[in-house]
Length: 259
Image 1 (cartoon, rainbow, N blue to C red):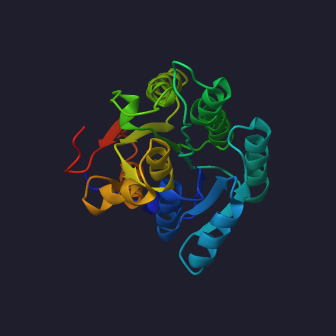
Image 2: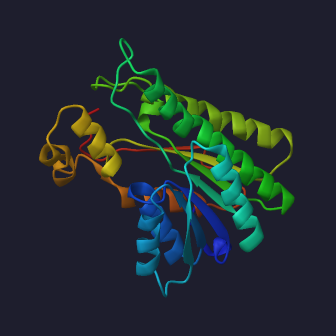
């Protein structure tokens, strides 16, 4: 199966959490493939900086300041897209967080933050993308950036509700697939589940768990951690599949992953 991104050229993709890591890497690769990308993040200035670097590329990167935990922010973002760019063809649900706490004596607000971002924000963005795609008769593609922790819980300090939020993403992927089938939709849904990724997000988690900043990034030098670009490549591969092929779940590990 040799895929192509040509069908998406000139189309619109939405990437949440586009200011760094996997979101930024994916946005860049999509723009280089000739796709118009709308990046959503609280740190809009980061997306603006990336957009400047991508000037002259086949596609274009737009930035919208949005907090994925705020439904109104998501609604306004999709309304702006509808008014200015038209139909949405791709949604990359990448925004995700973890919080330093525990289950045995944890902070309930931190738990809410994780679920509001990783689960409810994802659901709201998915709903708005589906509405836009159906209104415009688009056979689009939705990609959830999941985690191997959405399939297996490992022994690691302060994970608390993070794996549960990612297990929810695994269930939501299958539930959405079934819902789309029931209504006869050709919109595709895929879940991408990487193991450790060397990014701001993963380093923050490791530092929060007690590692020094230098130790938190040592995994990438030893080839233990994936790079954000590796995950972005996997996302583009999933998007490149023919219309009748749906990659439901794609799990990524580095060759040297020991869990």
